[in-house]
Length: 123
Image (cartoon, rainbow, N blue to C red):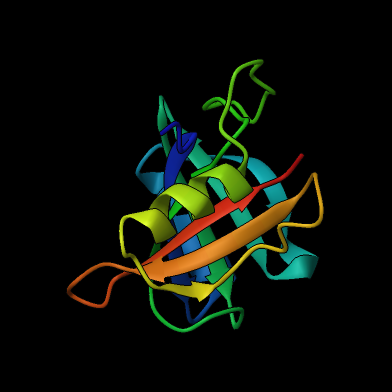
């Protein structure tokens, strides 16, 4: 199963303060927008998303179809294929993808400890 590029999505209280903090750690903006209350930041191959007032808690994020530079990759597993595999393995999804569609879609699931996982396909 090809989940795509990995990042950590952090729920932050103050986007400006968090941006400044992570810049001091060497992260640079690679996506997002302050006016939309989120930024995607990168340091080498490490990616984080910082999100203000968009969700509760932190989550692991995978983006099928993207590499670490948010560039399309040719071979990837569609989120609907991933969903079918996870369900066949007995994993309960918090939010399922609409299998009658194609293109951008996402699913949510939790690991055994309650950590949220987002599989978010953008194309």
